[in-house]
Length: 186
Image (cartoon, rainbow, N blue to C red):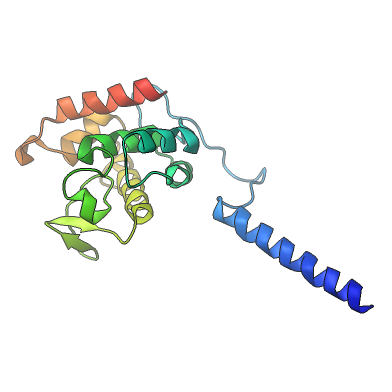
């Protein structure tokens, strides 16, 4: 192989490696063997993304959110955890005006999740190194055994545990605001 052919071969390999890294950063290769993601409908939070990353970024940008540009994290986590991204965005809206108010400005928390073992915390809430980490942890929590994993699948069922009246919340009003946002965006 000549010097020019060798250089071309190396450049082609570097290009392929870059393409592979880029595709993996978007969620990897899609194959026919993957379980299809169903879209959430009605009042259930269960289902993959009902909003596009671009729509989420538009909403966050319009609100002046520091998480603007992370729409892809919402949609990828929505697909992975099978929780509607519109519901996550509505919780983010309700909890901190999309990260522009309250302790979330410091914690990068999508939903002001109470502190628990294994987390850094600020003012009694889980704290994250980035908005991406906070978004992913919210999806993990809601899809887990405390919520969807135990059969709580509507905003009203979830908010009764997530934002209980014993903490000074109105779970019914919270759920209604989540459902209103989701209905508007869908």
